[in-house]
Each structure stands twice: as structure tokens, then as C-alpha cells.
Image 1: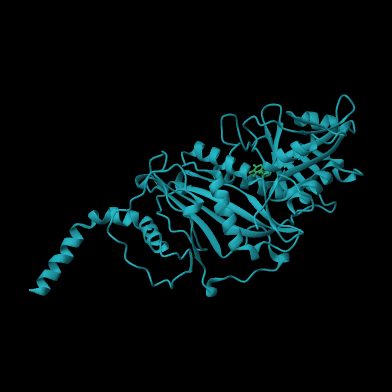
Image 2 (image 1 turned 60 degrees about the vertical axis):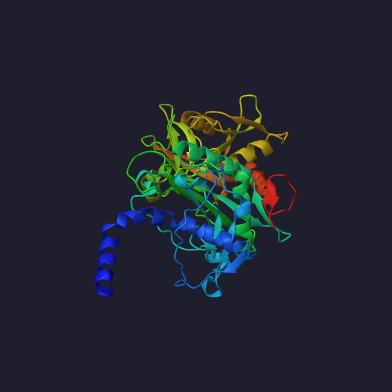
Length: 434
Ligand SMILES: *Cc1c(COP(=O)(O)O)cnc(C)c1O
């Protein structure tokens, strides 16, 4: 009896659902197999099929040999269909991370399947995550931030991406997330940017911000290294505009009762768990008329960082020389690419002494009272250089003469970095990608 047989089959499926688990778990990787097979018919790029054209997953187990890293050579590209392309916003309306480009890069990691899977570039779309994914509960997560600059010669450049890759791998290590070959990711990233190159603003006050992110996706509650992870890169055109006071500098607020980082912690890694807890303090500072928080540490109120930027001071040292100082990488400081570049560049300027040293609030106040403190500024990829003209601290309202210098160091640093990034000068820090 066909009807009876049909009912039996449904009942069997119902009772044996658990047996299909492995097939479901692998489905995204099985897709790679399909793509791989069709790729042998030499069709590296193709337009995304309509959403309803999903083919059933084959029931063969994918043969993936274990490997340490994914490879650029395995990259699969699926271009967005014309109707999926987003209109490009006006440069004046960009803000920071409000708009996203048409494509994204995705690389899955499944320990059971030998580790890293093949990188894919696909149309930009939402992620599909299990609600128990470790990233959502324990912040098993990390991110990076770098930019693609459209130079005066119309070529697109990256600024020292190898340093971002190194930092990303260090953060992965600390979080139990899988590490990878940074050069391979830079190649995949460059390809993504080439595909979305029209999104790199034709302007020297805007750039394309690149946000590589690595999240633990294993859906179990244990606090341990995840068996599955997802590395993705999304791109956002951004403007470098940010809020300042009338003099073009920012006002910062230092509260000795809160810390951003502590010895032995992860202040030196770009992991999401460092940033959420700064929001309340930043909002409190804003209510008092400040733009950023100056993060202090320890009984002597050492200055560490400002907002999500490294901090620099320029002052006349005890020998009477002009000195550029920033706190040393003692575990409390995020090793900024901008920070390192400033230190390297400025150490070649003969009229400036460059030093990594601990500076306390008392020292800052003392130097300022003696008229020896000349400048303070923040430095990071997002805003590049942010001069500081005021510091709120306990009952002090400290005015820093940063904007009163005739030839400020912050401006020289900024001009030098911009000249490299936008290709006004040739420099090994910049890598042309197209
Ligand atoms: C990202 C970041 C910086 C700046 O690093 P860059 O590599 O120069 O962009 C500084 N401090 C914190 C806390 C950061 O998150």
C-alpha cells in the first residue's frame, strides 16, 4: 500500500532526525565541494543565482585535507546580481560605519573538517548564527580596522596591512580562535576591495574602512576554544570628520575610578570585550562636554590611551629638547599601527627626541604649569590624528596649548602619514593593490 508506506517513511524520518545532524552541520562546506567541482569547468566568477535556486546538498562526506591556513588560490567569487547593488551615498553623508559595500569575504573554520575552509567572496548579506554561538555569550571574538586609500594617481593603497594581520593572529591566539597566514588574508582582502573598488571614495577626506572580524561560532555553552569559527571582512566607506571644539581639537575626560585595561589582561588586543564596557564612561564624559575618555591606570594615574586611540605628548624635556612621548607597550596599550609608524617616522626627525615612557597625570600637570607641555594628541587608523586642547581630571580643567603652536608636531605627523597613504610620496608603508 503506497499510502501506508509513505506514512511509515515519514514516521521513520521523524524518529531518526538526529541521524541527519552530520549532514546539516556540514552543509555549508558541502557547498564548497559543489563550487569546487563546477570550478573545474573554468568558471571562476559567476553571478549569484536567484535565492530560490538552492540545490540539495550531496550526501557524500567532503574530503578536506587538514591545513594550517586557508589559501588565496582557493578563493571562490560570487558576484552580486545588478539588482543587489546598493546606491553609493554622498561623501558628505558617510559618517563612520553607516554604509556597507556590495560584497563581503567569508572563511569558515571547522575543526572536524580539517580546519579552515575555502575563502568565499559573496554578495553582502546577514549572517546566520546559532543563538548559542560562543561569540554571542563569551565574546569569543576579535576585530581589526584598516583602510584602503584612493591615491592622487587613482591607485588604491593599503597601509601596513601585515601589522594588522600580526595583531589579529595574536588576538586569535589569546581567545582560542584559529590562527592563519596573514599574507593569504591580505590577498583575499585586496581582491574584495578590487571587486568593490568603486566604493573607495574619490576624496582625500574619506576612505574605505576595512573590518576583518573573527568570531567563535560553535554552539555550545562551554568556555573553551571553539571547534568552529568564522572569519569575515566587511567594508564601509567612511569620512574622517569627527566632532571637535571650536579650535579644531578635542576635549577629553579622565576618571581615575575606571580602567580600560590592566596588567595581564587583553588591553593590548583588539577583542570586542574591551570596547562595550567603555560606552557608559564615554557617555558620561560627553554629558560633561568632552569628546573622549582619557584612560588612566594605577595609583599614580598613568595616562594610557584616549578613546580607542594611542596617546602622544610633545613637551620640552629636562635637557631642554623637544620630546615626543607615548606610553610603552606594557600590556595596557593597544599596539597601534599608527603609533608604531609615528614612532618610526619621527625618530628620523633630527629636531625631535622620541621616547616611549610612562607619563602620570601629575607629570602632565607639572609640565603644563611650567609651560613645557606643548601638545597632546590621539592617533589611530579611524581618525588618524586627533589634537587635544583640554583635559578634565578630578577638579582640574587643564588647557593644553596644542592648537597654539606655530609648527605643531601633530600636523607634521598627520601630513606625513597622509602623504604616504594617498600616494603623494612613495613609501614602503603603502602597498598598491590596483
Ligand atoms: C585600534 C586601536 C588603536 C589604534 O590602532 P591603529 O592600528 O593605529 O588603528 C589604539 N587604541 C585602541 C584601544 C584601539 O582599539
